[in-house]
Image (cartoon, rainbow, N blue to C red; front, side, top):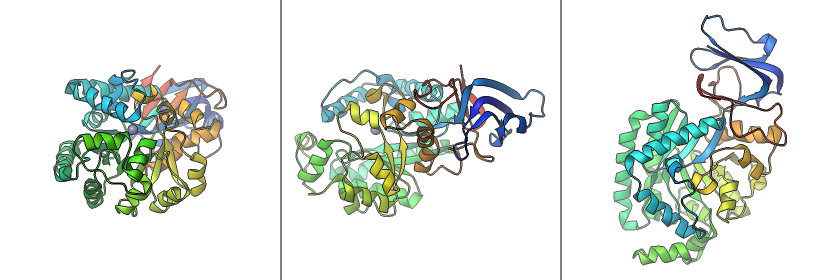
Length: 400
Ligand SMILES: [Zn+2]
């Protein structure tokens, strides 16, 4: 058992508690939360008891968009033009030996824990993050990426995806889920989107897509021109103008019908009808303000998403884009602070991933995913990015 007392405890679904405590049972779930004097002492000798009087105890943070297999590439791609940046990433990945991805993913998971992040929604192509989370005992959803901009490639790409899921499937558990990610409109053909959508629906798999991120993507979809279109044509792949936005393009493909298990990443280049389409589809949005800013994509309309009732979580994107996996700066970049920032980084992130019944708040019976930050207040400035203590399912995974 584990008992943590902290200067303030923030359940998120209830008001903050001064001098509070949380008791975790042997199954890794929350057994009690409340004022310190009301939370029982653990009966068993040898129970883990921690006192953090000058710190805040919060639910573990949820990072709704990472690429942890790319951790080793931080600082390695300064290409300013987005289509070339994507091509550089592909070349750097091609030059990476498999065991480097393994080390990279494990470091990425530990970096998340050091930042108080206890759940990640990770997209990647190597399977390394699924292996790392399984080996280290982490929580998350790993979306296996599938690529194939040439319609003639769709069948082969889908077969490769099925093989990858067969290889990784045995690692899945209640804490670690497997999903699929048809990468983006500039790397996935229409037939491949349809095939992956059918496949994911037949197996009930969650889906993550990079969508409406850059102006270049919109130009490709709407006009069939621009740097992505040029790159595809230079590979002999035919490109057609769709005369609509990327969101309407996916809707037209049938992919956004009852898409409640979908996580749409970025959604910067969207207008009012696009937001309504996303809301009607029931998708969630992974909002990545620092990455969007770093690449010059602009800012996603967070306030309009929330007004429309969309589920939204915050994500750091890859460390190649933003340099780290810490979430408090992401909340600041989104214009959020204090309890509102905390809600977005915990229960709202959990809702975006469909995990709000298991994690995202300090409620009795929920999984004991916790983070303790060395701060006595959540208001400006935000707490330091490095956690004092991080707990996943009742197990201490980081302690400073
Ligand atoms: Zn991404």
